[in-house]
Image (cartoon, chains in turn purple, blue, yellow):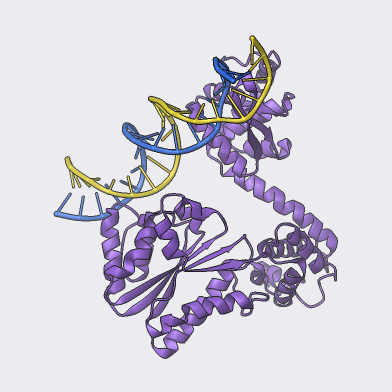
Length: 411
DNA sequence: CCTCCACCGGAAAGCCGGGTCA
DNA sequence: TGACCCGGCTTTCCGGTGGAGG
């Protein structure tokens, strides 16, 4: 027997692991009937070649926004093809497609144009998209997932998209925006807000009971019968419910628990496996984030670690910057300006690797107070995988003594 | 109550590597 | 080939500021 076949067929735990991934759209969405109904009611006019209202959908991560939209669009497209109505849904994830140019290009390309990734003037792309849309009588529903990411780079794309209907002869366009940032509207032009949010749907977080239903539904498809201990699903649900009812997290937890159990050659998935999964997920996220950091940020972070190890549990932007500058010089890396480093610090903060708050020390100025959040040993291990940072190791003691002398100066 | 520190963080502009087009 | 466009990263410039100490 082929070794892969043996490995694949020998899974005592999983029947179908993919069911637990968040890309999977189940054929039934528990506890989202209300939202599904509302969405379907709003979109129904599309089947009569009328423009559906634009919709804004709110809800935190893992509340089923994307799954619901996917689910409803699939049904809509199915019915429209049966009724022979030209009605399509175009899904755009604004985390990847995050500029006006790329949104237009993505729509145009979906309709058969061939617009390159970059290079053309944006208004040209806009015209091409318009032509493509208007080439026949149709309704196109554009779904902008993570719309807040797009808005951060200006609201022009939305402005143009919500106004486009007045320039079209045959086609109708309607926009569904999905956001998990409740206050993203404040970045928008009031005119865009009013046209974009003709309808609003809010997705509340799931509670532990509801998460349990979701997990049970998926577990039936994903696992072999009887491999889950009774308390595994309630435990996963409870943990995820604490974290603002995130179904995605609950599913990840269940999947990773299963994977750990499988790797341990266990016949059952137990509460202990879930506990291990919690730890694994956390540490994986951090190391992945650190690994993919730009070199400059890595050096900056390394400097922060040196500071922490030297007994500075908290430090300021200026202190971090001066260490960073020293490190850069030693390994021949360009030194960025303090302004830029300040932004890098904010990024590290957003990733949750460090914690920084702006405080005022009165006479002694206003600055960020920074502390490293994650276990420094783990961070160090990941950082040193980068060959450019390996060399820094030999300066470590040197710098520590420098800091303890409180000179903080240049070397 | 005022001052003044040591930064914050917005705006704008420059550079660079990706690309198109005629 | 040169003129031009785009996006990401970075620098330059600069107005703004909470609160300890005078």
